[in-house]
Image (tube, rainbow, N blue to C red; front, side, top):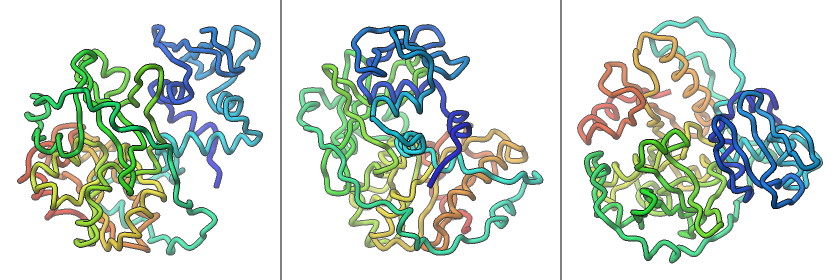
Length: 358
């Protein structure tokens, strides 16, 4: 499987670059609209590697010259094949659906856009499927000295302290970050993400891998589903899974329906990788419910059709294997960018009962 280098690069923003640099231990810092970091391109320690947002290029002012993010990854990981570097970026950032090339469509405000996609034949080419990923395990006790405070803003967003405690969530009062441990399907801690509560820091991304004493507690997002370890038994029993974008949505679902009744997991992005789907498929699901954020202001708009088109591309990959449905707000119930779970239990249930089968 290969992706267009230019198409992937076009979808990357400076926050994605920052996240990748953090992963590789470059200790990045924003410098205006640019980033300065350690010269990891040649395993150096000097802070002379610059990323320029206006050109999407790096310059090493020691001796490596100018190159893009994929060439940097080739250098750091020792990759000969450029496609392997591109594949790493796509899967690390869970970008699969964002970079699928699509045909132009005639925009009309109805759900017929979903009908344009014929069901793809059942996934049978094992060469494109992924073996079980065994990700690095982190010591979860590292965050146990952080308190489990009541987080007022999250309680106002329909997330109870009891659910936060159940999911092992902690609060860093110094940096103003919520610490969210990510467990794999076997209950191993494979990453810790931080969610900032400091508004001025949100411009650098609300969610980022947690860094502690120079160590990054991150993982490739496309190879896990947040909340699956806690929800897998109920998902298997109900044969249904709800996939949201963020960890908050999983916590809201548990607050509404109870931790024992949770069937909601988070892709940690607006895409669903094949690996994430396989995690659910092996639990015997018969329906996958896509509950992504409300990323349009007016249902009768091109922006709305773009969202529908994107979801249709995601669904197309899986409809031959399971039933796929989607929660789409056609009535303007949700605020712009809100999750289907943000506005309370009854609103979610209304959208769920009126979900669209693809």
